Image (cartoon, rainbow, N blue to C red; front, side, top):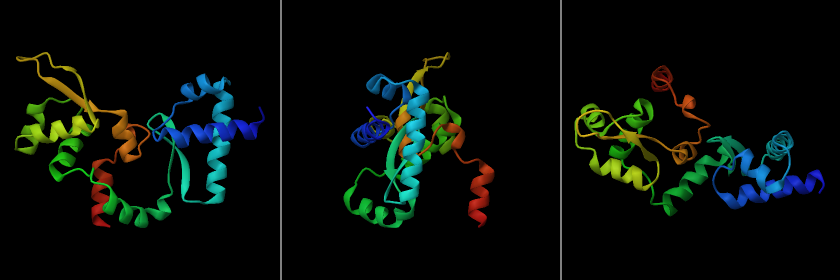
Length: 176
């Protein structure tokens, strides 16, 4: 198989997947060394950037995924507002932010920070697979410890948790 065919195969897998695909999964399917797959992915990423189309390939959530070009975000948001009802409520977003920054964390700690009951928000986030149960805390009642998932990284377009904005970043954006 020629490099062009290999790239086309990777492209087809990324398109079909709809979620990040790891290099190890591609390696198992295409049966090439990881270094060759990474090289092909880098070539594909560069080709998409050069074409400057509505689709891009990016590294996200420890894998690679096809995504829409941010240059068209205004129109994508219009489309999303009309066709997607899976938006998160403000309480769910607040809860998710607390979990993302404080994980692993128990429900009581989330509620102490928010000042209100968070059962519904936690249930919603869990059902949407944005959070997961990471274990139990070694304390009376052994409450569940919550943390974010790979889907959380994908939903927000992050490679890993280190890409979460810091408090300084948020203050800087608010002042601008």
